[in-house]
View 1: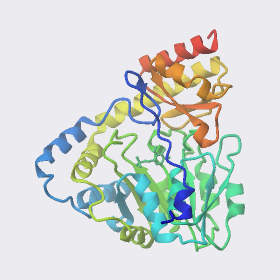
View 2 (view 1 turned 180 degrees about the vertical axis):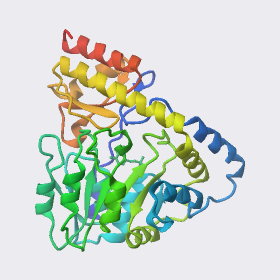
View 3 (view 1 turned 120 degrees about the horizontal axis):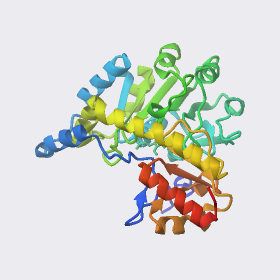
Length: 354
Ligand SMILES: Cc1ncc(COP(=O)(O)O)c(C=O)c1O
């Protein structure tokens, strides 16, 4: 028996860690928890879990269709956007073909491409930002997918509407672009891309979103892609039957309508983002400008040196060594208490006077 080479060489996913007794702020989850409406909706369907779910996620797709003002065949709902990437790669990229992205970004693009034994071409970020020009230079006749993460995980930086529009203009028709907007709801910059209008302009654009962040449903696994029906329906053919379970569908549908939870989450992130940027800057820890629900900053030494001591003092942050950024940490904004706790831990461990 021989394990396939592409599988043998794949690195295992490095998740944000949990430490008993410490606050987990290492996976960009919602510190306010799930939407109460989503909890209620999931509880309401518990009695029906002896039945298979609706394999077409009809109600959820219909709600998304209204939200985006696009027909339902433009939507692919899956077991997290992680599965969306894998389905897109399963359907649209073959051995001998390639995809292009950045190195210091979400690892699941690489995973999806390697899973189907295709080549992943990765360029470096430039000053913490996606380098669209360098990505463009990697595209050739065998390129099938370009993955852009906006705002980028782990840096929180973004490309604006004009930059994305310029990149999409004039791309060859043998590929499509996946614009991963897992954190887009948190962006406040006025020039942040309006992906709804870009979708109407560019048939080779697929936008992905998740219920794991703003909606607080990471544990239920729901994400989706929206875009050209031919690309979307091709990917849907690769899906396992019933890939999104009953509880997940019901909770996601309810979360979409829970305006109070959405507003509270956005208010927390916007307020804490401003606070933490200021506080980390005061401490000269070089926070990158973030449009997401997390901040990336420098500990000026390998994060591995300090990670356990920080966790022992009650806060779990993310060491970015697996992203190729060993001196950078990524921290999901928590409550003001959590954030002040992190700051005082840093002051103590780094000997800082704020
Ligand atoms: C940029 C990005 N995209 C997608 C995901 C995965 O989302 P999901 O939970 O829907 O699989 C994450 C999760 O951390 C992420 O950071």
